[in-house]
Length: 389
Image 1 (tube, rainbow, N blue to C red):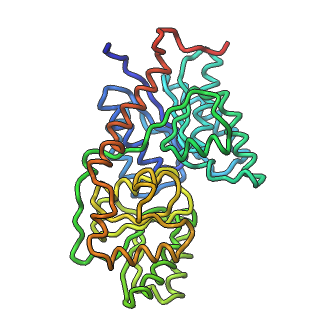
Image 2: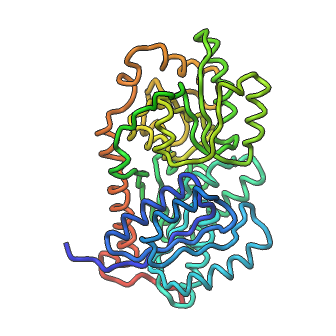
Image 3: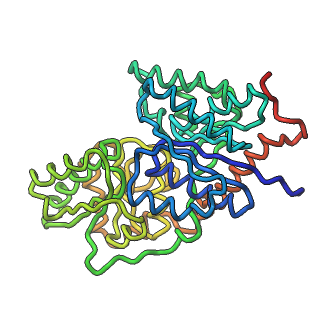
């Protein structure tokens, strides 16, 4: 196979937290090591010390630099100024590939890329939703607007990348059958993530790790924890690890229910440190695409209890006993109790590490994404990518 040219790749997304940030960090590292020039453009108003430390980890791989501009979560008049500022910054970096992640990142990458194309500058425009706008309902006015905007933006998109079958199917159901090139490329974790992490001597029974907002289900975790105690007839212990807009409300919920001393709260930290604090990881999300926390937990040898949402059944298995009905704290408590009371529950329920590694590795993900980039920048037929006149 002929050696392919190095590419200049710019990833655009809004908030440097959670799964999108993890996804981009893995691509940055893998593609930089493969000889490509990589940059990131994201919001300057979100993230904290923990996220700053993650940026420090990948800074050596960002030959095109880290560009941060204020990007609001919701649509606002300030977006016009942001788009103009973003366009100028992107133009100065001369990317071959603009890859937008999440709704706002997708808008920035595709509109800026299209403006460059109008000016006869060749650039591939890709979009990965990562759930995002696909969580909206078609029955609401806001959902109709967002989903129609997704459809409209297909005209400015060279390829849609779906991170799981669920996301691909949801897009077709809510937005419509794609009218541009698509590719299914699963999220993946690195070689170093497939190392068992033993629990500490002072480990708790359950941990929740993630954003503290209702979409991720921390309130369901608290409710199910109390019900698990009643099912087993004894006090238990747990930790909620993460940051988010509803942190204080969850703390008040625990105090009101008399759980303040049995459920602790810690700020966001590196996932390997969090995993040492318990064997059982609970993922009670109301909606997801393909959450990294499930892959990371499996790689670390943890026992996963998760909602049957998004691509999680594609990882754990469609008939897995670890899956619970979304939004149902009774069902969640039932499975949480089983993990503590049933011998060998983990070994009988969790997928084997080698099976997970074969499909959900960052090396496979990065290889397939890079192959798609090259197909768009240098089509196999040898023809130049079309440029708008």
